[in-house]
Length: 264
Image (cartoon, rainbow, N blue to C red; front, side, top):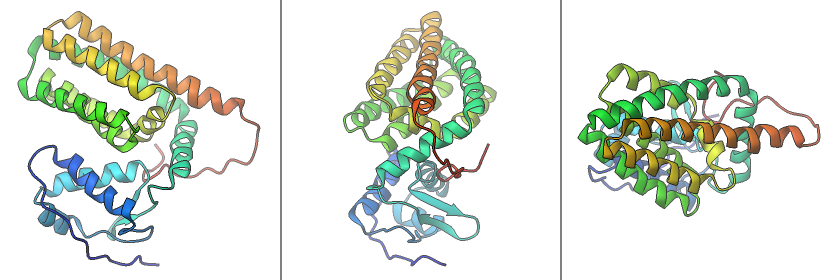
C-alpha cells in the first residue's frame, strides 16, 4: 500500500551545519503532524532543490532519520514516515533490541573502534587539521544542546559529526574510511547508549577531554581520552542494555529488524 504524498512548505537552509538543519526541519514536520506515519517524503532531488543543499547531504539526513527509526527508505520508492516522535517508547525498545540481537557484533565493533579512535586522536593531536578541529568544536556545541532534552537524534548526529571531525583532523583518508564505515553501522547502538542514565552528560565531558587534548597537541592524552571514551560506552552498553535485559523476566521476543537498517 502506497503512502500519500504530501506537499510541504520547506525553507531554504543556510550553508552551516546543513545535515542538522535538514534533520530538524523534517523532524519538526513529523512532530507537528504535517507528516504522519505512512506518508511519503518528496524525492531527494526535490528536497535538495527546496532545502538548497546537495543531494548527498539530503541522503545523509534521511539515512540518520531512518537509522533512529523515524523513516523507512524503500528502494526505488523513496522515504516514508515510519513513526511519530511520540512513539518514543517503541523506538527506545527497537534500539535496545537491535543491540541485543547483535550483541557479539557490537562488542567486536566497539573493540575495533577503541583502537581506531585512539590512533585517530593521536594523529589528530600531531597534525591538527583546522577543518577537523572546527568540526569537533561545532559538534560539541550541538552535543551540549542535545544533552539538555535529551534529544537523541541531535546527540547521535553530534556524535557522528565529532568523530568525523576527529578523523578529518587526523588527515588520514584510509583511517577515516574505516572508522566512518564502523560508525554508520553502529547508529542504533549510539541511540541506545545515549538513552541510558547519565550518558549524554558523560559523553559531553568525554568528548571535551578528547578535543582539549587534540587542540593542545598532546597526542598521548588524546589517545588515552579516546580509548577511555569508547571503554565508557562499552560499560554503559553492558550495564544498562545487555545486563538489564538479562535481569528482565523471560517472555516472547520477536526478532524485528533494526529501525531503518538491515541485520549486520
